[in-house]
Image (cartoon, rainbow, N blue to C red):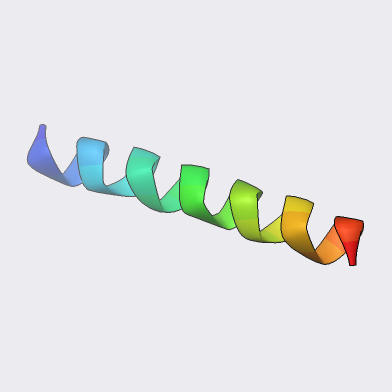
Length: 24
């Protein structure tokens, strides 16, 4: 369960980075 939560958080972070790159 902790692993799933960690993966979900990492996925969210990746999406944020993609949004930032797209904005730039």
